[in-house]
Length: 219
Image 1 (cartoon, rainbow, N blue to C red):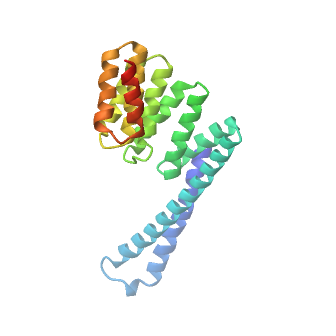
Image 2 (cartoon, one colour; image 1 turned 180 degrees about the horizontal axis):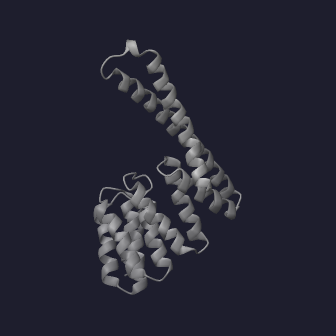
Image 3 (cartoon, rainbow, N blue to C red; image 1 turned 30 degrees about the vertical axis):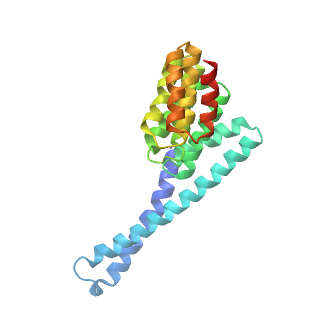
């Protein structure tokens, strides 16, 4: 029997016990219930159990995230990878797993494991795309992996894609600056200039705008 199966049974057994207890309660007091009241009682019991389980999962996920961050701060990279993987796989859907996915992707990137980093950033976009807090990190993380692997054209398009899809986000100015850098490395001065001018036009109050102006003066 696998560890996953054991874990699933640990979660299902108390649930089954809860439902059976509720049914026994209703059976003993059947004369007090009419119509759909029996179903309502069972449904309420099930709802309370699910809410309790979700809260417990969130707490455990938060504890694992703390362990990952502590290991990361102490330079225990193997612990980061091991605990981080457990966090994102066993507690998928929790806020802690979402943050852990980005942290783990960043660490894979830092040690040159770009394929694994890119997979995690892409997975974040797929599973947590509606949580915009870390969406910038995920999108630019994918592009950064492409850049590190020599795909400057693909990286530039990735940075631009984020900026195009999030025109009101201040972080888009940074994504555009990254795209401009890629085009500079590609020797495409025209694309570089157009992007730098876009930064100045669309984000005049951003600190990035000053950098864009300085680079324009050097073209």
